[in-house]
Image (cartoon, rainbow, N blue to C red; front, side, top):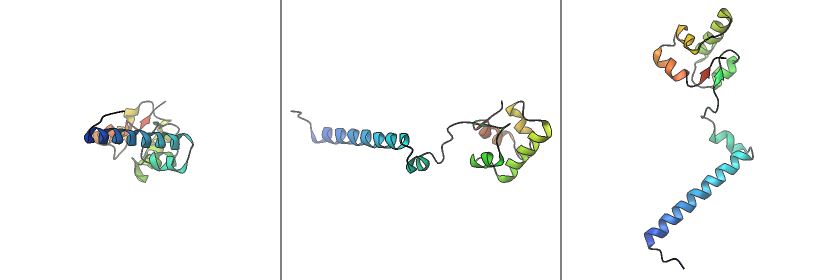
Length: 109
């Protein structure tokens, strides 16, 4: 029916394999299986609100040390919350480099 060369058969087999693996992963993510936690362990799906995040929430982002997470909460309490994400720069230990990484993970509302 299909006259494919050996190389073409390899390519078709590869593409079918990738499609099946992708379908399997997609299925596992939809049925809330234990593999979901494994696959999404290091992926931040949503940003964290700095004005409502608990210490645990900040630590789970894996972007902050315990000391910096506590500093953020202390700053929030002392200043009545964050009005802008750039206020992170006012916290000791958060410079421009660290801020650039954190602004992708957090937001202020």
